[in-house]
Length: 61
Image 1 (cartoon, helix red, strand yellow):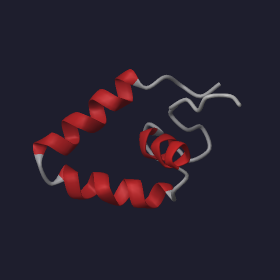
Image 2: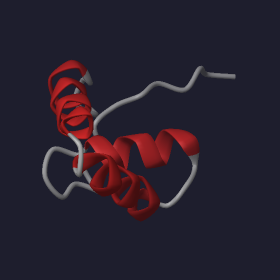
Image 3: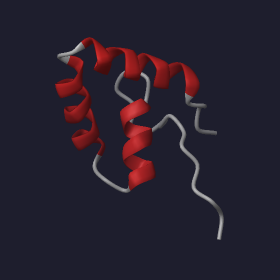
């Protein structure tokens, strides 16, 4: 069994593919992850978490 890896999504990409990648990794709809990031985005913490994830997460190949 191949271990799952977290990547930015190429097919579920809206801005950077972070939410799509997290949704694919957790096997949930990426829209749910996007809604959570919007709720967190109302605070500065959510924006910082998204930007850090956008720079750290590797691209899907």
